[in-house]
Image 1: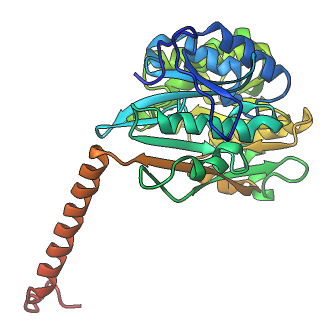
Image 2: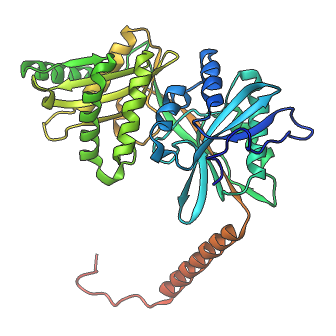
Image 3: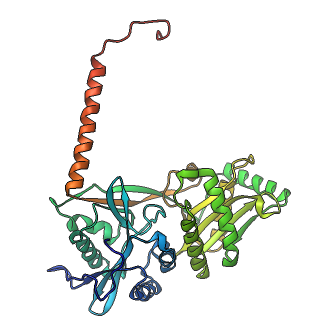
Length: 388
């Protein structure tokens, strides 16, 4: 176990030689030092994404079955915690893959170390040096990094050859909708108005919900709609534990005014919900995290509820909508600009990597051999079924 179960009295610590005066410890997510430091750094404005907020992290902590193989790197300068990075290990295809906590199923975007801006470069270098020295992982998958962040910048220097192989940086396009102008075309506006009028005529309506007391029922309906539509293709609400996490995270973020749910009903009853969106408010941006919708009512309720949510956000002073990652057709209907997060991956050179590379090489050679054999076979004689 790489991270979990280390109390501060027995955890490993070291000083990065010739690079940093920081000490890096590996601790449990429930360590009391973590909560105090995290709250202090967040209150000072040093958390750049809701996916690294204490409310989000503490909700993960409080669903133990989700964090059995997770923990936090803590950077200390003298007696002060100056940086945090929550990590989780998952086994995929026989390899132990380490990433930012929840990376495999929550899908956190815009991530970096939690630290003051002036400390981030030093914190990131110290933490990655700690990981380079630490056994117990085969692949480091830093997926959804802030492209200008300290973690993204520190990877190459922290993992030198021949002990590691660093993959080229991958760009992850994200659509952003500015709210200081038109957000969709004239045709799109007409479609939304038509669908809202149709819903109202049936006794329904669009509503914005910011009262955390109303979140549990709405989230349950949203998750039911989401799973009914995507089934096994969706990981985010795929188990009771993951659904419980989202209820906790929404309640805690909602208490701080950081969650906005939007519902479009096509009738007067809760069961008439045609679309529900779950969004996170962070530093003037509204992040469209997830949603659920019906596809059997002859409307496009998902598009309409998102458009109304954007209009409501603009009225409340938000500057842009962040549609987060994902290749979804609806995004093309909004007047968006594209900026990218990045993915940095590192493989540790060990026997497992050698076996994986050898197996892939053998498969590639076999495939090329099959292609050559196929190319040498004579073409079939013309017949009535294959003449053009």
